[in-house]
Amino acid sequence: MSRRRRFSGKPFGETLHELMADTGITYRALAAKTHLSAGYLHHIVNGNRPVPATNVIASIAKALGVEAEHFREYRIRYITSQLEAKPELVDRLYKRLL
Image 1 (cartoon, rainbow, N blue to C red):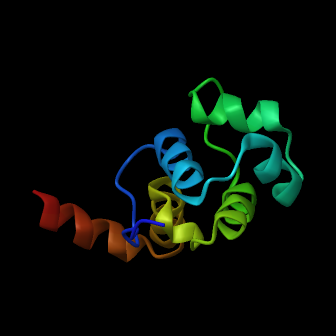
Image 2: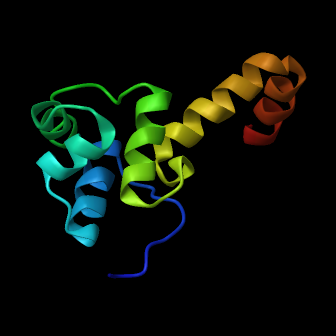
Image 3: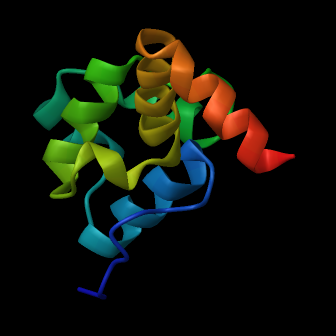
């Protein structure tokens, strides 16, 4: 198995496809591990469905042997939730980005 970076910078579907290839897992095997349908997973990989809910990302990550944080979209959602909970961070971040 190839060495994986802790965080992917690629879109969800592309990252999922790469992880499946790296681990040699098929759509059906991943579906069995996550209790999702193989068709749904295929649609996610091909961008025909939106990025799944956070708990689904976590389930997929666990089945593939990575942390949920490996997926960029999971990290974005976490950051967004923290910004919503701490509005003072929004102003600080905004000022740094200017």
